[in-house]
Structures are given as C-alpha cells and as structure tokens.
Length: 292
Picture: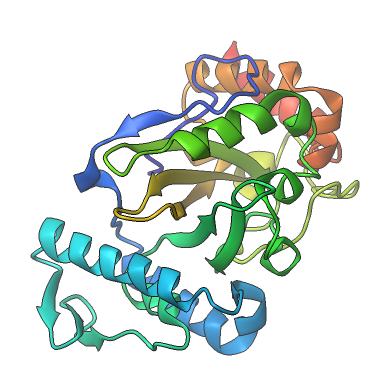
C-alpha cells in the first residue's frame, strides 16, 4: 500500500509544499526493495547513458555524497548494513558495495531504492552536476545535465512565475541540519518504473474507460527529499517511487472526492503537461461514481 496520498484535502495548489523530515527517515525501505535493486541493476546494464550522467570533475562531489549515504545507512539501519573494508556490506543481498572512484554515485543502485541527483551553486543558480535516475517519471536526465534549476524546470507550466524564485531561495538557504521532503503524484497508463518520456501525450490512456480505468491506470507517487551535505554547498535531491493501481489507492469515497477535486481544479496547461486529457473523462466518471 502506498503510504502517501498527495491529493488529500482536494483542490490544486502549485507550491513547494515542503516539510521537515527527521534524519533517521531520510531513506525508505519497502517490501519491493530487492526487486527494485534488481531492476536498477538491469537498467544500468542496458541503459547506462540514460540513467547515469555526470559532469567531468564531479567525482569528488559524488564520493562525498556516497560516503555520507553509507555512513547514514550504517548508523540508522544496522540490521541492513555494516561497514566492511572501504565499503558497506548489504546484509539483505549479501553484497559488499565499494565505490568506483570514476563514477562513485553508481554504487547507490546497490544500496537504496531512491534515485538521487547532486546540484552545486553556480552564477546561474544551483545546477545539476551528477545524477542517478533509474526510475524517472517522464523526466529525461540526459537533457537536464549541467543545467540550473530554472532551465531544468522549463517545461513545467507555471514554474517560472510561481516557483522559480522560491526554489532558488530555498536552495541557497539550505543548512545541513535541516532535511526537507514532499510528495508529488502522477496518473500513468504504464506501470514501468523507467519512464524517461511522456509529457504532453495527447493519446495517453486512449483505451481507458470508466469501466476499466480502476484496474488499468497507475497512481504513482514520488517521495522527494532535499538536503545540503555537511561541510560543502552541494545539495542532494532524492526520489523514491511508490505506485499502485488506481482502484487500490483510491479505495474510499473521501479519496475519490479529493482526487476529483484536485483534477477539476488543475489548470488546463498542467493537465496537458501531465498527459491527462486522453483519459480525463473516464477518470472523472469513475471518481464521481465512488465519491458519492
């Protein structure tokens, strides 16, 4: 069961919506841990250039992040990880994970379900210098590498007007003792974890009807965290994917009413961005029947 339901309360709000998170809760572990790690390994083998990108010279920042992650896992998950040599023993998989100095961040695929990116300050604002994104939700890592936040979010309707300045201020003001998180959701007609494209698809979900959408549409949540690494200005952004069928997630009249309210209030340009128009009528009918 997905532990988050972002449309709770209904309505549509374009805001950062960040909350403080306890350090011990930074990394999540679920029953799909081993299957997610196996899928990450497959994607690295078959699509490495799409799921891992780095700028030359980012290796020290990657190593700093990986060491910080390893220390965190050893400290907060002693039943799952222990220090071994220059790496970490994953007690679930039985593997000892040591970083490759030429691409340190890659080792994270053998430790955690989260994807992660590293950003550093630049004259244009914080820019993306390394990323390990095996489970993108319609997000193409290769086209984002090296760009500042403003250009990374160019395609997002309303970002420049409503979120660009607050986001830039947030990144500049982060301290290493304050961990933040938020949950974001999408409705997808494909259960694949690896989805690097799909925004503005006019034909998405064309086969969905009010009679089958509950068992064919996927409710996908990105649980996102943001933190600054100690003793440097680098910022780490992580994403953990949770997903389930619409009928399993929207299991009550209250949830149906909240999602119905959220989709109705969503601006048309955001609906197009999220590829909703192709199945919006079917979704509305399905939700109306359950919200009453």
